[in-house]
Image (tube, each protein chain N blue to C red):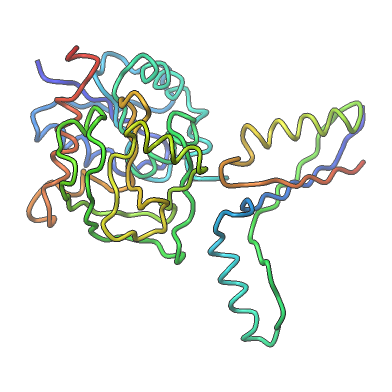
Length: 84
Length: 225
């Protein structure tokens, strides 16, 4: 069994308003950061998981995202898996 | 015999006592149902009150669904029992999948605590049937995540099946369709962001909340059938 390091980025689904991201985007030009667009504010969940292979990890993580870690009505997830 | 209402308490719930007081003042009977219990006893209807169940960790209402009481409540609701979720209770009902859609952060990113004028839309739910469509109610809101959102398909269903119970007169939080409260298709599971238990006396600025909770006492589909 291998320990896999997983990073799950949870962000508002495209098309779902993200007022926090929009506020950050509106604030950046005040500091001179012009030309910034598509700011989205989400959260990062890190976890380690023990599994035989990468495919198993993908399946497990996709399942936990679907059923618990994200609310599929308003959130999307992007998963990054690496061997620890 | 008076109706007995179970008022659910999670760690972090903070509106249970106001609901119990209101129900008792209206002539009903009420008891706390602790979230760790796996039974709802012999109550006739259930209120899931507002607050911050389990600290609202991860997402509002996301952890509450794992409390043992929720399995018993789902069973009760699926057999026709009347369940009213208020504010955090509404969020819990959507996270549990007992009501469609989700509640996200208010447009404007402000925690809103103010009186709102609500318009009764559908009167087909267990509580809605005690109102007239188009009636206005004054009931306060108190939330950061009250911006109701759902897919266009779900929205058409809500409209088609008369599931939209309450709308805001002037949308304070960005909710799709100005939705303040909905029910399931069967009308026995109801969720609303405004707090009826805080509009129960002239001293509080409105008594319209009494009618919502009285509807719960009188409108128990299961026991009146």
